[in-house]
Figure (cartoon, rainbow, N blue to C red):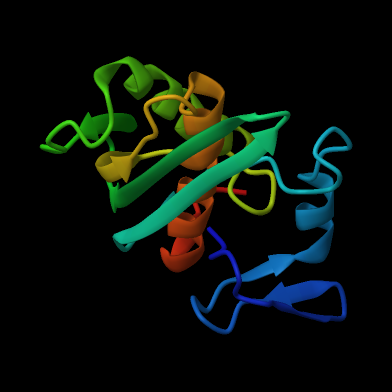
Length: 163
């Protein structure tokens, strides 16, 4: 197992991860990469720390706009896969937009946070948000949720599960 962001050093065909102390063959790393993912290892990523992220989507198009705003918390969910919850949000986000928010979350987790690897074993909680009675729609909340999850994952400590 190699931790993401370890910044391993190549020396003579082997690599060494200074954080977790793992030695491995550089050929093994190169062989495990995929052309479909642009050379990114085919492995899932998870988080080890909790964090929060805020996403706001605001767009004006010919008088009618789009608006969605969400605040999301991500927590480790070891061995339980993906779970989505809504905290007591006191109608700050209408229930009709909850499926769109979950869709935005899933898009990011499936495509990967930053490097193309899918994120697994994560609990995502919608903790707050806001809407506009006229300008809010599903598309705006999907975009806002995607932004929020990306921001939360930037703050969480990501770990590569396998190589």
